[in-house]
Each structure stands twice: as structure tokens, then as C-alpha cells.
Length: 107
Image (cartoon, rainbow, N blue to C red; front, top):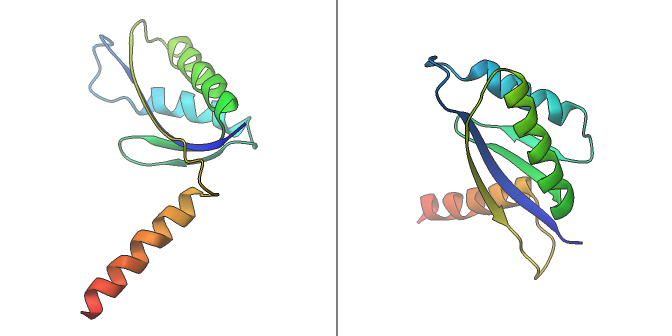
């Protein structure tokens, strides 16, 4: 099974609240129980790294946690980088961009 990097956004709809932080916290609590999934919370998405099947399973668990926190409808966006030509990880992708940026600054 391939290791992938995924970005997921789970947004509750119709809650009557402008803030979604408590729902995000419920989804993040799921990730705390899955050390096999590397994750990073960003302002708009949560980035995940792991086996594709595990990623899908944990996203489903995250959705259920948001529903358990009170949401009755969700808008979910999932973006997956499934690269098969060699190993990659979240930190490696960031380092590659930073290296290009440093090179561009020098010229």
C-alpha cells in the first residue's frame, strides 16, 4: 500500500456558529489516538501522512467525531498526493520548496 499525503477539511454546516474551532478540536482528538498517521494542523486544512487505507479510515473517524460534537451536516474536502515514483513526506516537500526559494533569492 502506498504512503500518501492528504489534506482534509471537515466543516460543519448549519450550526448557527461562526467559529468551528470546537469541531476542529474534536477531529484533532481522533488523530491523537492514531500515532501511525503523521499530521499537522494548519489554518484551513489538516495535513495527514500515512497509508492510503488508514488515511481514509481516520478521515471517516474524524467526520464521526465532528458529528458527535453536534454537527448534523458536513462539507468535506479531501486532496491526496499519491506519488508512486519514490518516497516523499510532508517535511521533504517543504524542504524542496524552501531550497528552490533560497536558490531564487540568490539570483
